[in-house]
Amino acid sequence: MSTEVARTAGPGGRRRVGRTAGSATGVTVAVQALFWTGAAAVLGLWWLDTASVRGPAGWFTGAGRITGLLAGYVCAVLLILMARVPLLDRTVGTDRLARWHATAGRWTIGLTVAHAVLIVEGYALTGRTDPVTEGVRVVLHYPDMLKATAALLVLLLTAVVSARAARRRLRHETWYHLHLLTYAAVLLAFGHQLTNGADFGRPAARMFWYVLYAGAAALLFWFRLLMPLRLSRRHRLRVAGVRREAPDVVSVLVTGERMDELDVRPGQFFRWRFLSPALWWTASPYSLSAVPDGRSLRITVKAVGDHSTALASVRPGTRVWAEGPYGALTAHRAAGRPALLLAAGVGITPLRTLFETLPEDPVLIHWARRPEDLVLRHELDAIAARRGTRAYYSVSQPAGHRLPLDAGTLRTLVPDVAGRSCYLCGPPDWTSAAVAALRASGVPAHRIHHESFAL
Image (cartoon, rainbow, N blue to C red):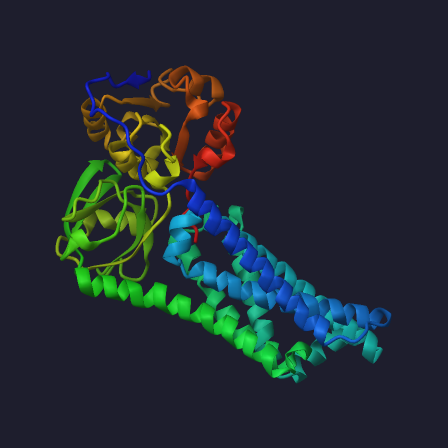
């Protein structure tokens, strides 16, 4: 059975909130142009240092040099994407950055493997030996090659644990810490690029490479370490209380000093590190589940791993280290259009804040497996009644109480769905199905917004 919250008299008037999508598009285009310009400059290093290419050995070696240069360049880009630069996060969006990060990771692996294979084959042809013998000689006798080989093995391990099938079997905490080995791989591989790279003989080329990597390292140091440290010292965040919302869901209230100075918006998330014995060793991303009020922040978390399960027993007064805020799943993406909010399970948390704050008559649909999984429903009902908006709920159990996730259902509940900006939050498989249903309902891809916490 689906439930529609009755309309009540809501606040009058309409207004446009935040920046338009045009600014985000402009930044996205500029970032992509900068990336391709850098890639062209990297290829220029090979072009300037290559007079001619002759014979199979020359072609293999030349291709190995090109793939090596591009692999090194994409590694630096990967580090920049891992820095969580606020300008990119709030304009390009966490979802798109996560996709870029995944794509850069795949290209890094592919280019690195191709570089190793092509270079060894080229050297083997030049020395008239077999690839295995030549590969052993390169690894054991060339400077920094043992470290580079270790870097390749680490990258391959990262690729394995990042595959979807592997991630489903690993705890989030395990995957997260293994994924951090990417930093070690880049550090191990850096030296051999300059000591063995035939394209870095010119001082200008070496300087370009140093500036590229030093810039990436500076962004990481500033935004992943210094900014969270500044936030922690300035606001002194602490747990104020923990409230159980469902058998496996709790809300955690965090307070601190100068909370009104935090530049945080409905729909955003932080990476939270609770400094208790069971939780200090990892940081996990959780969205705000209540509109920031200048006095406190609230998250609502379902127990799906060690970190989220342990939150139920965190004590008031526990210090909190937070990175953020992150995410562009905010009001500016609506671009003045009415919104449709689609949530599954605890994915309701960021959409609950948008349901309270978005103008233009937002509509909410919340899917869950059981009635008790409709967390925060009492708050959603109160928001809908106060604003005169609509909220629909769907559960799989008991049988017959479920709304199908398809275009027909969406058009029945929201006849003007094709003209709305749509926000999604839920598990990956559900999100894919929701995107397909929205596209079938006539919603353009650029008006479908969802985010991944993978980065």
